[in-house]
Each structure stands twice: as structure tokens, then as C-alpha cells.
Length: 248
Ligand code: 4G4
Image 1 (cartoon, rainbow, N blue to C red):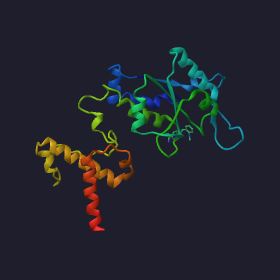
Image 2 (image 1 turned 60 degrees about the vertical axis):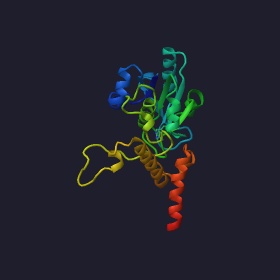
Image 3 (image 1 turned 90 degrees about the vertical axis):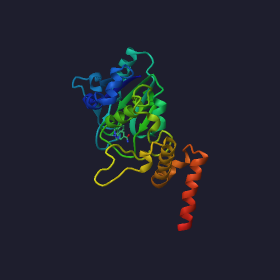
């Protein structure tokens, strides 16, 4: 997958994208990430990229022209831009499902806004997807773009090693993840659930599934609505429900 990022702060991406799993994917040639400084496409002599808002008000607005010019540059590099994602608080809430969907694409362009926002003609003409990573406001779209790129990259086949499989993740099956333990067997007086030491794989799978279901019921019950639940899952949840009914 080729990812192009348009930003006023390309240096922000060096840390996260040159580290660990993302960097290994780049070295393996699975992922090709390029950043472009929007300021390089400003036509005026002071290379400004913002101006005061029409209609008045506080703060500045990112101008359309440098963004259009930067996109034209990308189009010269390769005809089809693919999906153009703008990170903004007004966008569609990002989740694992959208990460899996975007991971199917051959190329993605991320547009990171700053100041109070971007001239809306950019959205009208150039943007195909508006995405938000949550209901809060950040100073720029860079951190959200990094979050989305990371979540998308690890869903591309071959990015995670065989050791770390995305199938075992929280949210992969629409449920929260079960607890994890590693050596030592006892730490500061705290043990590890016996079943995990039993070597009984079927019982271990059952225990983990049960933990996932109970954690989801306790912390994020709304997720159960869309989760894929087996007959046995429903039996486990019904058992809890019957127990609660007796107590209350
Ligand atoms: C576009 C419009 C995304 C981009 C306005 C971006 C939060 C998110 C920005 C802005 C962002 C998110 C400056 C308000 C940059 N903040 N929740 N800021 N603002 O995904």
C-alpha cells in the first residue's frame, strides 16, 4: 500500500513511522509512506498557508490553494489518487471495521488540517472520506492520521508477524480482549489462572472466550449488539443473566 500524507509538519511523522512494526513493513516493501509539506506548495512569497476567516471571527483558516497544488503534485506522480482522507472532528467515527476496510486499498492520501480548519472548498472538491478518531479537538490532524495509518497498516497481510496475529485482537470479533499473562508464574504474590497452565487447549479457548464475553458485558455492553455470538456464547451470557436475576 502507498500512503501519502499532506501536512504542515512532516517531521512529526518521523518518530512513529520509523519505529517498530510500521518501519519493518516499510522495509519489507509492504508499506510505502511519503510525507509532503503543504507549505512547499504555497505560491506567495512568504510561503503562507493560512488567512483570516471570511465572515470574521478568531483564528486562521488553512487556504485551499496550497492543498490543491499539493494534490496536483501527487496526481502527477500517479494518476489515480485513491481515497483522500481528511482527519477532522466532524468526520465519521474511526473504528476497527473502517481500519479493515481501508487496509484493502492500494493507495491512500491523508490530509492533515491545522488552525481553526481548512477552507471548505478542499473538502468539496478533493476529499472522499472525513474521519474522526474521537469526540475531542486537537491542534492538528497529524496525530489522528498517525493513529489511522497505524491501525490500517497492521491489518495489511504480512505486516504483523505470525507471532502477533490480528485475529486474536480486541475488536477483531467485535468483543473486548481477554486478559493476558506471561512468566513468571507468580509475581508479587499474584498467580496466573490455573486453566492457562493446564495445557488443555480447548478449556483455555473456552476460558478466554468467557473472559471476553464477561468483560464486554461489564464494560461495553453496547458492543454485544453487533458481535458475532455463538449458541455457547449466548448460553454463557444467559447464565450470567439468570445469576443476576436471582441476586437482584
Ligand atoms: C480539520 C478541521 C481531527 C482538522 C479542523 C483533527 C481532532 C480530530 C482540524 C481542525 C483535529 C479528530 C483544528 C479543529 C485539526 N482534531 N477528533 N484538528 N481543528 O479526529
